[in-house]
Length: 307
Image 1 (tube, rainbow, N blue to C red):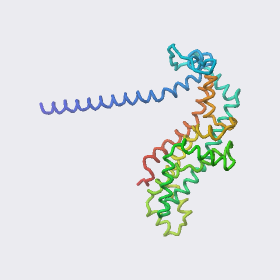
Image 2 (cartoon, rainbow, N blue to C red; image 1 turned 30 degrees about the vertical axis):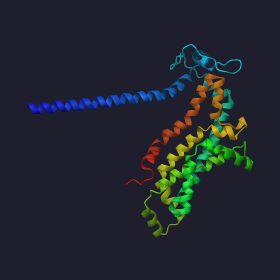
Image 3 (cartoon, helix red, strand yellow; image 1 turned 180 degrees about the vertical axis):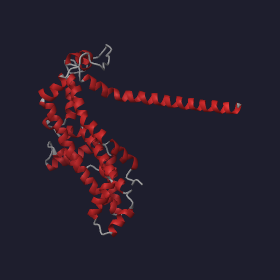
Image 4 (tube, rainbow, N blue to C red; image 1 turned 90 degrees about the vertical axis):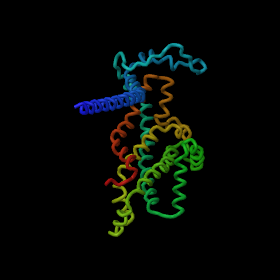
């Protein structure tokens, strides 16, 4: 009887320790989640404030001197999450009264969607070639792709600027499209994914008389569905938030995407900045929520074929 009681006490202690450990980890994760979500929540809630309330809360932060410098803020600025009165004035101004914002929004769409589609097409064809071909030349070319992938955008901006100027496409949409369409990022990921397709499947298709095109269409593309979705999401988010490329390659503000235009709103109309930021977040959030399962599958399996 005493031994059974001891065993029960030990089990209860273990359960308490496990529950305490899980509870502490959950609270830590909840705290970090709240910290990361706070800017997004603040942006959404403040977008429903009117201009007067926003200026009263945050106007001192954006005040400038006569020479354009920042004013030292000596008073304490309190973050306000809940508006005193819900107002849709900012959204009405953005969507109906100020066509510039919507035009910049569609500029972002016009840049991002073609880049995403054509970069996937080029990457799929190139990845299939890297998977099927053998030889030292292929290995050297793939190594070059990896080196270019490791380079940040800031390194390739000057070559892109010089090439765009030489081609005569500087200050046009093609200056953004062409470097984006032939970016090596998707080629690298899809090649690593395709290389994990079992060779026995491709050999069986060749025995049955399938051509390289049929193998690519009927076998590789269906097996790479998760990777294609995940790469498409990453490409969209990457180019949707681009800033450096338009600033360097486009001098005409008429062609700038909304990502560039947002910084200029902050300097003037603070209230509109919150509303425009919310509108700007919608496409990325929808695409991420729609393709979340594909993104997780593509990253976790890394191109393997599920058994």
